[in-house]
Image (cartoon, rainbow, N blue to C red; front, side):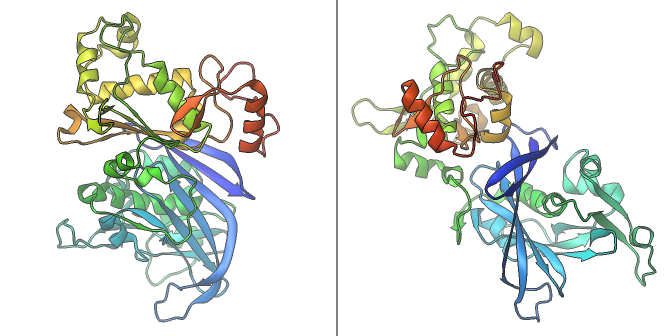
Length: 426
């Protein structure tokens, strides 16, 4: 998975850095830093204090399907600053119960640095993981940092982003009654607080939350995301029917009679993804068939695609580079990822497209393939240079004059709507 750290000011998003933090089955994670610094009255770190005037910086976490959340940095003039998860939320109830205005992490200031005590959100000592579990802040040893955060190379990741760990007495050059490890960063490093809280609190909890994904809840006070299908479950998506943000396909391939190898996917899949990238985003479900008479949806799954991968003639180019193709969920994702990156572009895949599976009772043996798509930050075309657009429940091309008008309205801040970062004629 790719972590993209972005900063957002005056509604303009600028890519700051991009670092691989862990390889997952699909998709990309982004943390978007909003420097708007909203002022208001906020609770302090001391529960006994009344709300005080402060400002808030938000770190939006994107890329996790069926989850909407962000990290808040609350800053005061006279009280201790802290990090906490935002009240705007859509996801599992278990995760919400852990994060709801709990696990505040104090942020302190020295002459040179901002710093926090080195702790991690961890299961309360002496308890077992269950639906009523509580996680608390516990000391985190440097030698077990990567094991506890469950992210390989996480220490190097922090160092690469200007975040360091050390003894309080050595870093701050001050005598303390109680010494201990701190995590610290330069004051101009605006992305550091969100990255730190993500690593030592949000991500470990998110992994544990996968055991308790239901029920899903939504607590949205002030919607800050442009799409909402990413935290809809499968039943909700299908009950909405096909529309501009939802599309269903029976298979990712052409047909079992085609001579096309199983390493090439149906152009209709590419067309739909490009169309959603250029419009509002959306969700593409593969393995969902529509009954011709009733028009009801049937969850057939993608086992037929797996069987085709096993029985079709081998693609020697694929085999040489990637090894023998098998009819498994893991290889299915590889084919999808490679085709999307080759035919749409690596840039948009990493930042806007997430591939996951929906279990319909057979686990990975016969799931529904779910592709969640965020709106792209600039026009997208396929490998032929065609800019498909999603309208209502269909995908189409517009005449050139209408296309120009559409993209100028869709991307009003771009000086050149013909620019495509994936094409050679940029």
